[in-house]
Image (cartoon, rainbow, N blue to C red; front, side, top):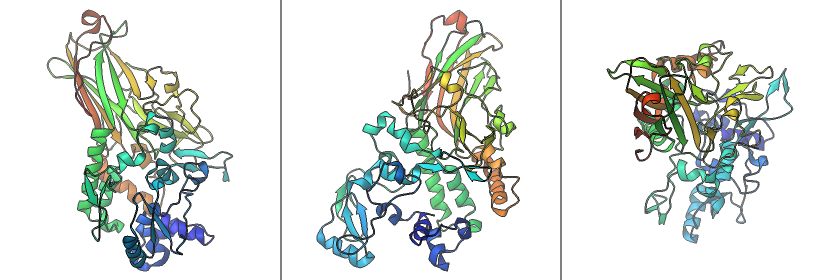
Amino acid sequence: MPLASVAAHANGAQNPVFVHLGGNSEEGGDAALAVDGVSCGVCHKIGEDGLGTPASFSGNFAYEAYGAGGLPRVFGPFAVDSGRVRVMRSSSGHEPVESSHIQSSALCATCHTLFTEPLVDGEHAAEPFPEQVPYLEWLRSDYRDEQSCQSCHMPVVPGEVPVTAVLGKNRPDVSRHVFLGGNFFMQRLLGRYADSLGVKAPPAELAAAADRTEEHLANAAARLSVVAAPAGDGGSVAFDVTVDNLTGHKLPTAYPSRRAWLHVVARDNRGAVVFESGGVDPNGSILGNDADRDGGAFEPHYPVITAPDQVQIYESILGDDSRRPTTGLLNAVVYLKDNRLLPRGFDPSGAPASVAVHGAATQDDDFRGGGDRTRYRLDLPGAGPWDVSVTLRYQPIGFRWARNLEPYDAAEPQRFVRYYDSMAEESSTALATARATIAASRRHFPEYGIPVVIHSGAGAPFR
């Protein structure tokens, strides 16, 4: 609710967020601002002072109140001629100003870099907690010198198009304001329960937005490959699954309820399933995942997987001051696990605490900038060959994050849990897939690295 928040802070007050829940824009005042959410002005009125510095993070952007002409300024990437400036002044009361900072990743960082102030025994902890820091992850990647946040999340329209329908002038490199992200689940939830939630956007538009989100994730998030590997003395067959992170930040990034994992299925030469790790229950949980079974536990990072109840889950696990897993954002003071896939060029050694790797992944030499490689060493029945299919699945709101709301005796969490349960079967999606035929390793593939990938989910097929 940035509009209501900015207005409240300008008046020397805090934004009473929960007062506006279920608000109606027809009420006017703060309620109308809260319902409007992220409007055009939230981004286009942000000035360039302090951008990219810690002072601007956690929503502490600086608005430039007035320009030289005495009118509030709005920033855009294009020069505006004097005639159109006059039209803008008279129709909106704002003065358009050309400034390149509107296309910088540092602008996005003001809201999408969030440090919380955890509560320990009712008091604020000594250190802020890096709850969401995709911008800082991007800064440590190769993408820092190649692509901005906007280049992926606001893709450019090919050719020249007018920015406005009235007196529009054809311009090149116009960014589409689609804001592609990762939370298709909430888009679908808002559409399905639009009436009871007071959502103004048509359900068909929210469904289309969710479709675009899933399409973007499937085409631009990750790539998988599978190769045979030496089994050694640990089993009859072995193979390596490699995940390449194609994004400019950790995968998944931002809100810590998000997770991605490997769903691996091996079938014998008759098509019968002889091994499965990472299957999905209809209730949204991951089969074999310790955290989904027990809120006080979590699945570790695995360099090698040898059993069905071991699942490679790329996620962040928050811990409270007693180092217990928590989904309470103001209780989190430490990361007990963070093996989210690193972007290309990210060197985990010496990374600051805000973006560091945590847990067993720190000891895995195959967990590196650009992705991860997991070895599956299995004792499978029969002589093979075995058909191995791998899917990298992704879930914006993990099962445990919904379940932990259940004990709260309040209308909002109870309603959310009901909504989640009704949509749990569609709470995850595939980011990439790969498939291979693997023979008994010791007999047929004594050398490491025989490539046998049939296809991969993102980009061109591997061979």
